[in-house]
Amino acid sequence: MEAVIGEAVFRYLRWRVQRHLLRSPFLDSIEHLYRRLSRARNVILPVEMYGSKAGNPGQVARVSLATLTRKSATPPWKGRLLYDIVRQAKPKRILELGTHLGFGTLYLAAAAPHADIHTVEASPVLSEKARLHFRLLGIKPKVHVGLFEEVIPTLAGEWHILYIDGDHRATALQRYVSLLYDSIRPGGLIICDDIFWNWDMLNGWRVLTKSYPEKVYSVGPFGIVFK
Image (cartoon, rainbow, N blue to C red; front, side, top):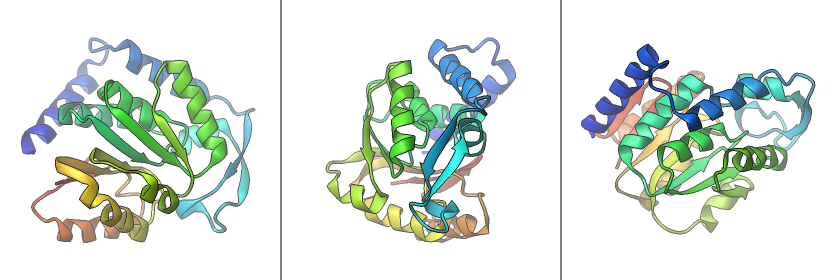
């Protein structure tokens, strides 16, 4: 497992130093899309709010596409690190919790182009924007719309990677890992995004490290549990 992490970090650092030489048309397309959306201040979306930012879950807030991209979407630096980790793991089946605008999904697809990718998003508005971006870049993940707790029981089969990038609360993080741990294949991994989001998330990650003391790593913003 250390070899997977070590090789991913090495490739990521090499990209940071030599990114002008290590180009990929698909990754460049994702980065171009991110830059374009981050400037879309005049596009206002009525977005249903869930997770840590929702005082009243499901309440609609009008937010610009630029704000959604800059504050919550996966930026290129983080997406590239996710790409390098997933690429080294060579997964065949991936579950993502938290589609948002679809950037995390795009990096997962870039890293594992032949994998069966499922992604879950509670907001119908965000899921439709994500579907648009998937069509634009030519990928076909299976998008499930609904609350994580409602969708998870409907998903069958074994997962090679679980990527958690939604509902940034310690209790939620622990609950999703507990619900899905048995469906992760031996040798698979759980990637938890934004473990340093706030003290609550950090404490939630610390609880997980005590539950799996010999199988956890932190790499940049990601906490990783190997099974």
